[in-house]
Amino acid sequence: MSDEQIMMTMISCDGKEFPVLPKVARMCGMFANTMEEDDNDITDFRLECPKLNADTLGKVVEYCNHFQTVEEMNEIELPFKGEELDEIVSQKWYSDWANNLTRTQMFGLIEAANYLDIPELLNLMGLAWTFHIKGKSAEEMRELFGI
Image (cartoon, rainbow, N blue to C red; front, side, top):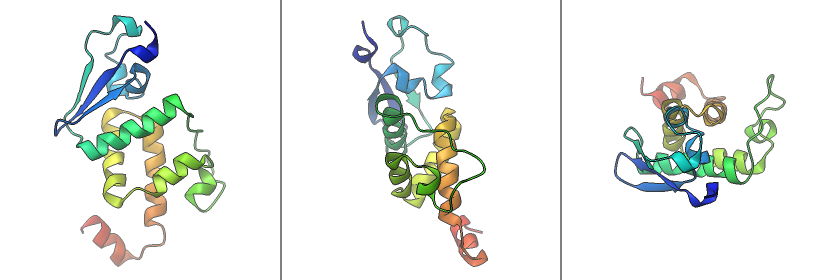
């Protein structure tokens, strides 16, 4: 059986199911550590994500699917070679995807990437959040963080 024929299901806290390839699920360190190495040996196809709502998990799956099936995201190099997200993340899909997220989605994805242990997504979201708050006044920051 080939990798493409085996599907797993990631399930949000509100019950929405997202079919994913095993290689997509393995991007999540939380699942990779407990999954069989050979896809044909997998017996548990349901991956519960009790801390993630459907919107956030859907975005995680969208990112991981693109990463695994279309184009891996390049490593974010330090020091930064630009002043805007799309200058640092030169791959258009990733910079557009991150730039089009709402504040709520961005913050949810930071939490999700940390919870699921997806370093590439956490790095992208950390960078995107940095640009989101860049140039804000102290008052705007207090309002943004509810302090």
